[in-house]
Image 1 (cartoon, rainbow, N blue to C red):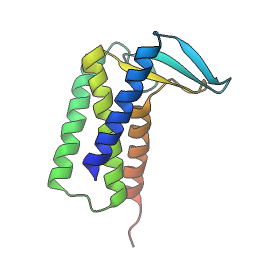
Image 2 (cartoon, helix red, strand yellow):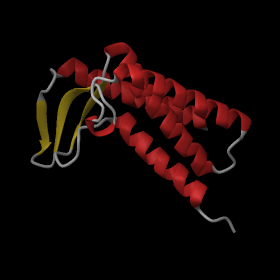
Image 3 (spheres, rainbow, N blue to C red):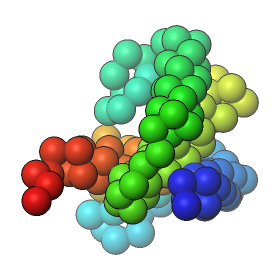
Image 4 (tube, rainbow, N blue to C red):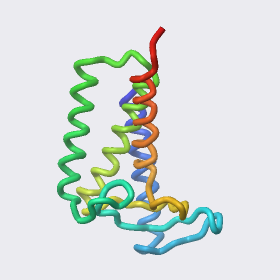
Length: 143
């Protein structure tokens, strides 16, 4: 289950980024639902919210370590909870998508622009949702 979710997230992320890169130029913005939502192509050399810009090399290593840690944890401690598996699959697929961007471009391709939030991508969304799911499962009292 984790591998399937990882693969679906990775493919959706990479296909969407490829489409945007092919049809837009850097910093171009196309209003979709003005003034709420636009597609805005940016090159993010930092992490979430554009923090720590120009540290892309460091985040390649961080991404590799996160993926290795997830692999080791799931290999040695099989997850029983379906939602924990979904969370790990979402986190892994998103991390892999953003890692490939850093390796291929030297930055992460971001394009989803809700104007009141920093521009992000599908991988970022999946990492966020996956982390929330995983934390809910971990901290939910079992009866």
